[in-house]
Length: 252
Image (cartoon, rainbow, N blue to C red; front, side):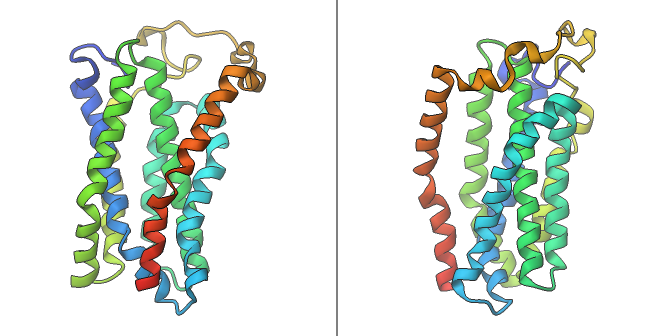
């Protein structure tokens, strides 16, 4: 069964629960756990507020820089490798953050975390697009994002308790462990879905050279550009979500 196969339960099959929804909620919990700890940890390096804010900004920068290369790598080397590598990279970045001896080190590790997060998101969405049924893709994507929202809901409270009761670095350890736990089932369940790499037994015939779709020129067509503009405006409205994290620096 391929990663996005909807047979035997549709969008809510055991396959999808273990390889899409469970990792989504677990990774979201891990990310949320870090929210109250990051400001305090950053300020512990005795730096001013405006500099400490970089620790949040740079993670988003890492995600932005990783978007296009991740898509290209997923096409060239396969979606499965990207999906598995993303959470592993996240775990490594959090383990390294625990050992940071300076603020520039912490910033570098948060940049890596942004790359890892984007790798999982793009890889997972691409696999859904590859193999999800015509009437299942929307359910899979919205359920995945719902699980992420659920995971982020209460996890900052958990992170606050961990930082207060043990150490400000404790949430980073928990985040790393959750990343590895989230992706563990995928090593067995997730199969390659890239049309030119997936085995014929997966239910798809290998396609011809992907360049036949027009490549980047296809992205410059009118409907696609309108979609890009809509997405850009939609993400502008999410600014307050990250501003809430930045505000924690002011009280840290």
